[in-house]
Length: 323
Image 1 (cartoon, rainbow, N blue to C red):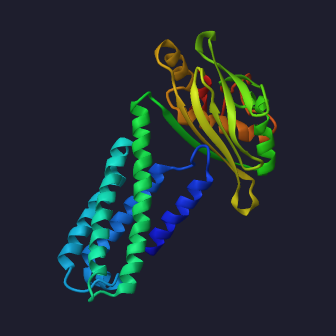
Image 2 (image 1 turned 180 degrees about the vertical axis):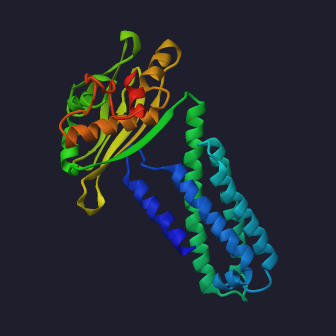
Image 3 (image 1 turned 90 degrees about the vertical axis):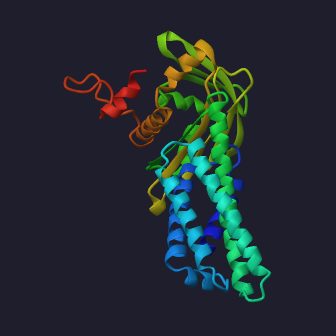
């Protein structure tokens, strides 16, 4: 339980450092909390007396702890079984928040009892409070994502790629936005219009185009670039790209987080086709091409070869070339 509290505090500190777009994989955190629920629930059912002694609660609470254990397991199974993002997963996370409130109430009663081991109860309360904070933050984030999707069709995309180049090299290349069309196939051009502003033109089906102006909201050399579109953009978007040194000196990990809102009407249909049926795959393919540009100096393709494919080494990549 103490480890859970520390994890929550570490995450909170990390989240405050990530201005612009918070680099949070809510679904991954929720899955981890699901496993935590199952583990805690099994302990409450199998060894309620041992657990009560560990947290400093005295008296016969076996029946109550077993009931709490069943609730924990139900929440954990619900989280792990739910494959749909945002709303459905958020509902299960909110069930954890409700369970946390019950746990805190029980520990509060134990603190007022002279029979309890006060030091252990205080430590257990701090641990549960840390996990509660993490549950609450994750639940709020998932609920907000659900609200954004229902109100305007905002779509969140997150992808990462390890590239055998230093964070400094990758940052310098990306920071010169005119380089982006070299590996982002949907981009026609990006022109700097000021120190922190730029104009973007994207190719769309049937010879059409979409355009928008963007500004950098945060620029940490060799580490982070965050941006947002300006008023009047054909495609409202906000995003960030982070450059982190990979373990063992094996290059750097590039992490892209993006939230965009396709416009309504015919233009919205064009934007949907522009990003494809799977926006995650579009960004993943862009990062694959970025890796090739930085490591090899060009995009690897078999197009034009007698027995080659039209674009890449796999049918999975070929489908992104068709748009």
